[in-house]
Image 1 (cartoon, one colour):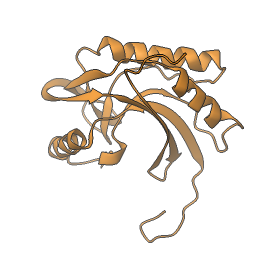
Image 2 (cartoon, rainbow, N blue to C red):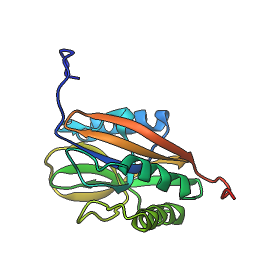
Image 3 (cartoon, rainbow, N blue to C red):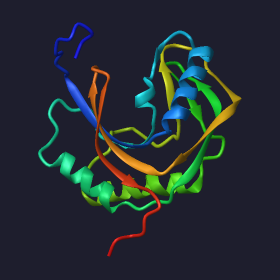
Length: 184
């Protein structure tokens, strides 16, 4: 919906698996972003996440795509983990927080999702590769990477999100607690 309250059509959508910071940490990260990178389009607090896998942008999802991705989420197992984002990375189009050392459970979770998607013949976006980061804003910047005090949060839940590209809307369509025992 636009600011004037009218519906605006979207042209594409995508699905992605992610972990999200808790709301307190998300607000702290947003305040940091406002101070560090006052220009550019900041990621809304409620959209902050670290992407683990994503699909192509499509005008109309293939029948069964959402159901297949929900099945992937239900099958994947992973430990809850602490994520420390302690580097600021500025690229040509984005500014992000990144971990100096991605925790092994994060890497394992992402590999599990990718493998399960492949087993189900659900394609990831062509050319995309996993590079753990949490985008702060979109815009142009001078390329740099530097340490920051850092933000640490407990990743205890995997989410599947449907993003309506261009509308700034994210819909959580699935969520699974990390650290649960494999069901028999």
